[in-house]
Image (cartoon, rainbow, N blue to C red; front, side, top):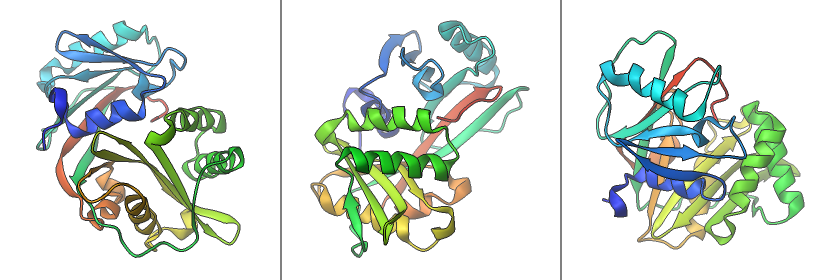
Length: 251
């Protein structure tokens, strides 16, 4: 399971999802990701390290990230992938964020009831309102981010699950060259742990070109989000780590 250009699965599919607005610049030991129109987008303005860093080297890398973006009080962000877990470390003023990378050909589950594709302006506006509300994220920011997904055109498919006229779950699949990456899978707070997200993601797989394509997800194991993808047959293949200084929008 080795993607072209030496890129690991999460890194390659991150690039795909950010393609409309973000630019990637090779640098010594890392890649610099920039999103000029949104300097406040943490994971659009950060350093992607070629190799897992030695903990003692993290301060120097964070200084380099701060210098690359003129961050001032804005958090500096580093990110990398590795097959096993990163050792604990102490670095005052910083936070280590761990996500699990899962992959596999995936299997479609039982059909989700009342699932519809997001296609029209009205549908996208409804999706933005739901996502902003359920993730407690600024609606203007959410509108911009989902606009980037929509700009991917046929490489992007979004579904919502409804209870009557109410959206209760939503999620997307971004696709390219045999890879499908799950994005922004959200379930209404009062409908969680009922299998809605799994059913919706299974329907996304059903509507994509199966069975040879690789499905990829990056999930926070602390929230149990990885259970959705494990239920679809995806298996852990590694970890994606981020180090942030200070505080800021995790976007």
